[in-house]
Length: 544
Image 1 (cartoon, rainbow, N blue to C red):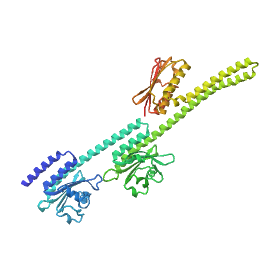
Image 2: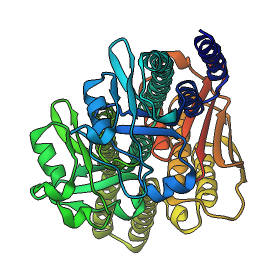
Image 3: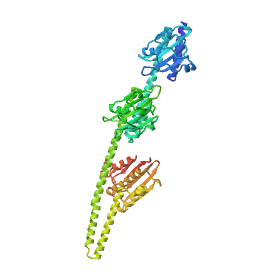
Image 4: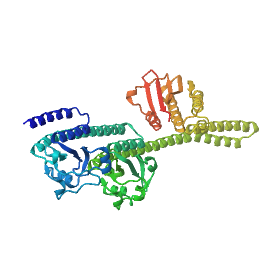
């Protein structure tokens, strides 16, 4: 009775000590030590079964010092008697371990062990591991009281392990949702495909603990090209070409379903000439499918840890990211097609305008030149001939000016030779001379040239704004300001004309074209106007 009371007090004390543990490993270590103390065992251990129920992922011991552990080597993986308990999840008491035919023996340098008690760590019929005890004091066998006490401790261990796994699972799902949400937001706001694919590979690699994640997209000739990668050797494989017919990625595209490869060397479809330089041993493949078209493949290699294989859960998560990558690729292609359509449409409109100008004005002036030359031929005296020649000369000069004006509108030479400030200032002067509108021009960009595409976008915005002022605003004064502020360049065109209602989306003013041209260089356009109150266009472009 005294012994039973002592055990009960010790068990209560163990429960209090377990409640103060801060981590799962610390709690399990205290539990193992309590089991050894309460049963009078020299050695005790707790093996935690992995999520697949096939082997031990943790093995916590007491009674074996660090030197002996080093001499023994790797901890057990779940063979022999330990394997029996993993697969059968039942209590086992033995007088001598070696007498059981299921025993696999001990590795070299392992201390001798005879008496044995193994109790499953279970909760709601789910086995989380086993609690093992050996070498009861004085060579005695373990009894039913020992089994009862160890079962109570095993139940506490099961609760602790389940709570830890639930917390780990909740944390993992939270991380997955955050990553999927971030990718979703990027899909709605980001137009640069490389940035989107880089974001997807980065998040997926973190979530599935892969050594390397990549995305391959097919070129027009069918060759797969690695367009984005994250992890080990990522920089080396971007741009790498994969034969569609001779690679695992190509086969996955054909079959249109995700696949796991536990050993790349044993899969005949794997192009090991590509995998070998990466030192890859396992693989995960998920096709990118958009609108029932396969447009790429997501690839992952080598899960970080003792077991490099990916799980079905990893594949399901990768397929979720593959869906988003497919949306990004498809969206980028549609944006590119739409941008090209608008460019072609704009070019056609410009060609029509130039054709009209050449026909209506330049063509008429050249016709006048021909008629003037005829007058020269038919002149009856020197004075009449001189007068006719002077008229022809005037018409030729006017025609030459018109041709030069058209050339400037197409592509001003000053923009290429001297930059945005000089070309814009020349444009403002020409505009003022031709229209009589007063223009105030101010540039604060310094002497450094900008990137060619930025200079072109801002010049065309100013040019279109001045054209609108002539056609629609009927302004008396215009202000043009070019300025550098922090990491961006701004262009402001303001007039005192009749203005318009910005909510009415007026036609024929080229505002959408301005926005699209600026968007191609990462810029944006802001419009402020009201009827009778003039108009201000504010363009801002970030510097690369």
